[in-house]
Image (tube, rainbow, N blue to C red; front, top):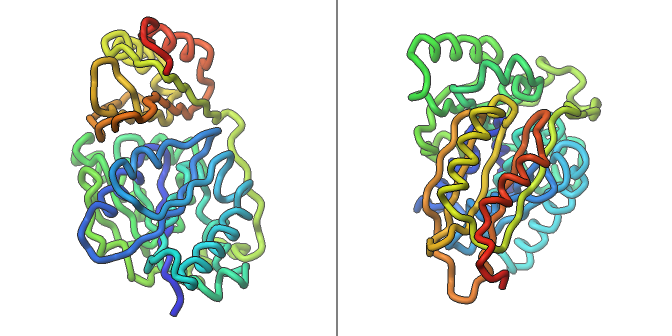
Length: 328
């Protein structure tokens, strides 16, 4: 029996990681292997997803899953099925969480054009998350955001509480016009029933070929050169008050260009990780798991955006470091 695969996509900040985190914490009986990809030199979703659990996760960085590391996807899928067959790991299905900048077409393509993959795996569905607060602008400026909706078998709206009902109605109409065949649902605070995500057999190759006749042959893909990413890392604790002031100012001035920013922080005097995430002008944080005794504490922040003042951001963050703290 082939292993079902769900491709979880959606533009930067749409809530993919939060949804996946909630799915993995549910007692639903599904054994899930996760393959995730982040755009940038280093990912942090492993920290966000699995702070206290021993899950099967494979992380791919340094590129988009739909282009530079596509060969890695084929290799990893092969390794997973080999380990499943020899009994070294146990899972029933795979969820691929793509970077928010990914065109889902080449990812789905892998399950049809690569024989070693198609023999063992079944592409069950493409699930696309849509950030109601920022979707209209994202659709206008980024072809990938439209592609993600166009290829979806399930569409989940997030952040509906951040827009007016009339605006949501207009957005919904736009999305339905882009993809009238996908079932639409809501993911409130990253929560959605697994029954709406798994075993829906939603991916229909004939329907996809109607949208994009060259689906099985066209593998060209490129990103907007204006979109870049960088990482800030620091082993010394960060001081909370200056960090909050700096981030507030940064968001006020450059929020339009900050497409996605997130991190796991080591805050002075705090025994737990501080997890923060933001999209454009919206930013929030919460306490994560406790730092274990003897564990190396480190802050790691990822920024993705257009025309970002990297040097100014790095310099501003360095002013928030507790310089008196030991680096050990």
